Amino acid sequence: MSELVESNKMLQVLDWAYEKSLNGLPGTLSAEELADEYLNKNGGNSIKACDSLINWQVGKCATSGFLSGLGGLITLPVSIPANISSVIYVQMRMIAAVAYIGRYDIKDDSVKSLVYMCLTGNAAVEIGKDIGVKIGTKLTQSAIQKISGETIKRINQAVGFRLLTKFGQKGIVNLGKAVPLIGGVIGGGVDLASTKTIGKISKKVFLSY
Image 1 (tube, rainbow, N blue to C red):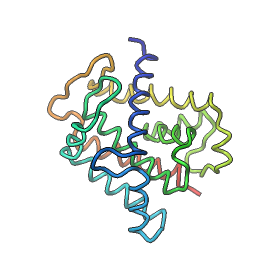
Image 2 (tube, rainbow, N blue to C red; image 1 turned 90 degrees about the vertical axis):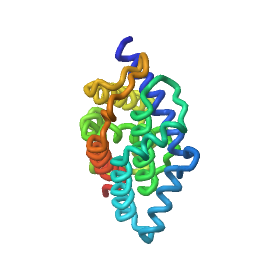
Image 3 (cartoon, rainbow, N blue to C red; image 1 turned 45 degrees about the horizontal axis):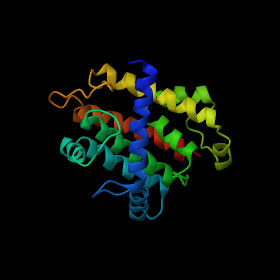
Image 4 (tube, rainbow, N blue to C red; image 1 turned 180 degrees about the vertical axis):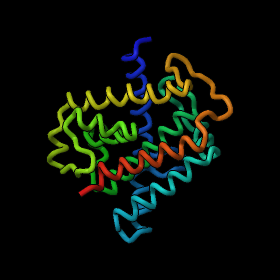
């Protein structure tokens, strides 16, 4: 199976996770509801709300029971281990919530692609350079509206390849068929560290001024 085909399948998973992030899974809050909850808890202060949300999410990702509990709720468009899809969903919802806190329209395709970009962690800086987006400089609504469909496609493809590399290095994902995980290879430490990095990148993208 070619890398392009596998990358496209990864994007199907991302699209699925984004839709679930916006609409919520049974028993979970949507990204917008999650963002509103943390804004209310922090008196409408977007920076405090963002920091509080990320810290809570990092703690949640370190709890394997939380992730495995989500696994039973989901039906994926392609074969991928439930642990991985759960991590992607949890991190995706966090990024979308941060974008909402930053007053971005999370239903906009350009914003969705920027959320995908954040999912790659530190690699987002490199992807951003390739498309002319400087991480740490807040994008205005008008700048986002100027992101072309071709650029969106380039972002999404770059993200797909990056995530394939990320999970492939751990030997735990092959989109041709589901590969069972042994002893929680995506352990709490890995999830915690990557989620923390992703949270920081998300804050730089959506809350920098």
